Length: 261
Ligand code: FPP
Image 1 (cartoon, rainbow, N blue to C red):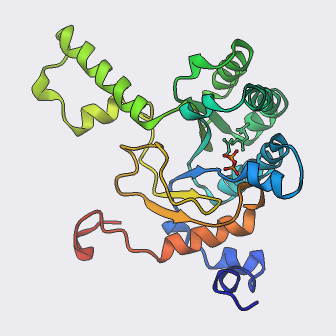
Image 2 (cartoon, protein in one colour; image 1 turned 180 degrees about the vertical axis):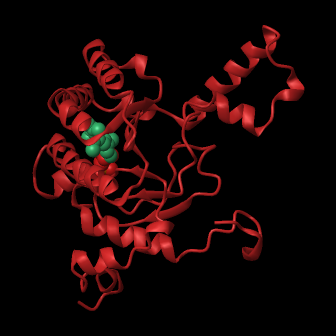
């Protein structure tokens, strides 16, 4: 293959790609904008929901690989606040898929030691989907091999608004003074208060936007964009992204010699 995209991906079998990974340099927190399900389906003359169904297979593979590599947190953007503007039929189908996924794979998550948690205004979900979310959160709350953090009804600006409200309430009740509001206080007020910031964000399908995802948390995150549509983004593609991530120097605004690893 001669084009520059495939040159990076084609030659090596999985084992060669795996051997290029440096275990100490893997991201602790990987975030993913899973884009391109609709286009994947349309290219095949299928209904859009078929793309979402196929996308779940990519989610499964990513969870398995994260467990295999010891990545501790995986955040996936499953449903944004803006997604409520999609046709009712697609929203219903997506909520059905979420319920189906949680009802059929809850026990497998428990077996693998995966803690399921969510970020976003999840109370906006239909009651039965919300019930599955809550049940799965409770049943996996004690597990710690991998945190599967699913953004549902999530918006980055909404998260900042919710954090501002929480801090304002703390000031109003006398638990906090305005002068105590610093970056740590903000961090504690975010939906992601129990998580480190993502080290790497992957967005599939050729779009090169953040789309209101983790606006605070992505401040120093490495960004990786690929034209591959989400249902085609499988183990090999993920390994290639991780190798590319490891080649980058993360300086956090400092000069390299002063950055501790
Ligand atoms: C973006 O593709 C994808 C979504 C809005 C939904 C992602 C959901 C899943 C992969 C399945 C649900 C996940 C779980 C954990 C059960 P798009 O529809 O915007 O694609 P397009 O840009 O090609 O139209």
